[in-house]
Amino acid sequence: MKRILIYIEQHHEQEGLDLLETARQIYQEEPYETYALVLKSQYDALKGIFDVIVDLSEECLQEYEMRAISEVCYQLHKSYHFDAILFPATSWGRLIAPRVAMMLDTGLVADVTDIAHGEHGLELIRPAYSGRIMASIQITGDGPMMLSVRPGVFSYTQHKKAATQIRIPQDLRYRTGGLKETGRKEKHSEYDIRESDVLISGGGGVERYFHELRPLAELLGGHVSASRAIVDKGVADRNVQVGQSGKTVNPRLYIALGINGALQHIEGLRNVDYIISVNTNKYAPICSLSDIVVEGDAYTFIHRLIDTIHKEKGYEGH
Ligand SMILES: Cc1cc2nc3c(=O)[nH]c(=O)nc-3n(C[C@H](O)[C@H](O)[C@H](O)COP(=O)(O)OP(=O)(O)OC[C@H]3O[C@@H](n4cnc5c(N)ncnc54)[C@H](O)[C@@H]3O)c2cc1C
Image 1: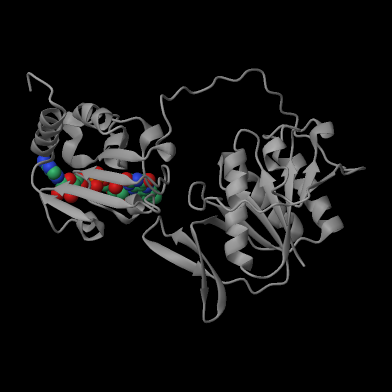
Image 2 (image 1 turned 90 degrees about the vertical axis):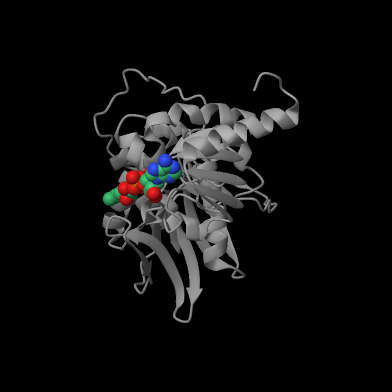
């Protein structure tokens, strides 16, 4: 029976849960046991889903204590001999995973965005060379397979019932790094584009009238997102950036207005049901991925669509 350790980061529990889908795609029909490593005891949502919860709440570890958490992962591996150790590629996950890999003297496939089973077996897919190519990586060593996985790419839906055991490890030895949290300022964002069913997304072609996207998004019950071209120019907030260095989204409808469709942008579009792109250049790369291409000016498109919706809803004065 394979054993998989999944790191559950505080405040990012869903990203940890989604790694169960990564595990399922790796091991498919092979029997495996899942171990959730949790720092705090609020893990009710994980009960009945993971086979084992390794509860570290008595250790009082904070998510930023990378060295201590790495040492704990190392010791747990020495006790349980995991076949795979999975981290979400969150800010902290990206820092802890390579430290654990070094301690275990094994490799790490970072920022995985897909899993494939080819003629040579398991292939882990990740962007390489700043996202210009997708690399397919095979694991040949004997160490535990270590991965960090891009959040939002896999999503856990299957609700397997497990008789979860809670284990509280004893005699763990680690050094905390002398860090102390003195305050926490939450970054307020009105919405999370990863949860939107409809995204109206603007790029370089709508830079001057990006603010016009919001009324359309509201009429369609969705939210506004953006490409990096206008985030870098300060027109849109980085929180709403779609793509390799932004967020991975999976809405039912994605309307790309004035977006060219660079590989790094497309990387953020996973499981999108329907893409409509509006572009003055019908040969822009995003057009070949779209279900509908509107060749023309995005500004005109927005206003015509708003007018049409208003007319259909019987609004007056438009
Ligand atoms: C390491 C790295 C990470 C990156 N990460 C990301 C990322 O996460 N997300 C991301 O988006 N990019 C990312 N990029 C940048 C990416 O390579 C592109 O530069 C960027 O996506 C371009 O954005 P764009 O298509 O909106 O703009 P442009 O390239 O400027 O394209 C504008 C498009 O609008 C069309 N257009 C112009 N005028 C109009 C009009 N009036 N109406 C309709 N269409 C019009 C044009 O034909 C063109 O297709 C990354 C790059 C690197 C190197």
